[in-house]
Image 1 (tube, rainbow, N blue to C red):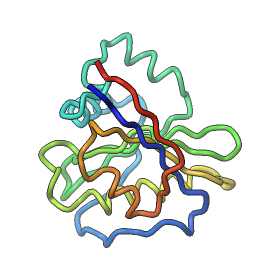
Image 2 (cartoon, rainbow, N blue to C red):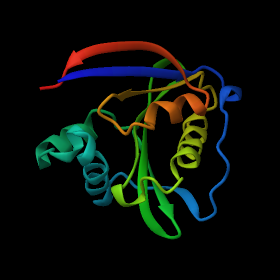
Image 3 (cartoon, rainbow, N blue to C red):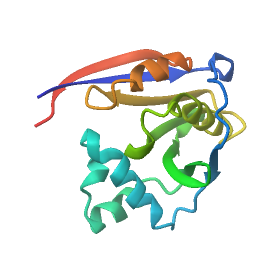
Image 4 (tube, rainbow, N blue to C red):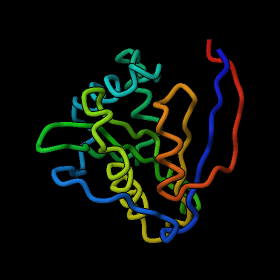
Length: 165
């Protein structure tokens, strides 16, 4: 199956176009040792074929080890886990939003725009000299993913066409 991967970026915090706040939606730090991380990422990614949906225990260990500075934030709605944001600080002041998503039971409830806003703000706050926040999405992700990213102020800087078999 053909897959289009779209890479988007912000090169200044001022480019953020925040979504309206959603009462009851919060983003809190999650310790990287939390067993919730693998479970949440697997559940979030399952509908979209993310690798996290089928990683073995050894693959999870490798994933955690590949970026010791990776940060994890739990999205919660009215006190219930609703999603997750992970960020990888990189060289030269860049931050990749490595994963962003909502649990299936929270998709379609109007949370995505503000959840992304909260995640973007955390990414910009990871270091005092962040100059770029970026991420990628796929045509296999939720149909509103790319419109949400563009709506928050990200601009496309690259697309790749591949085959997901």
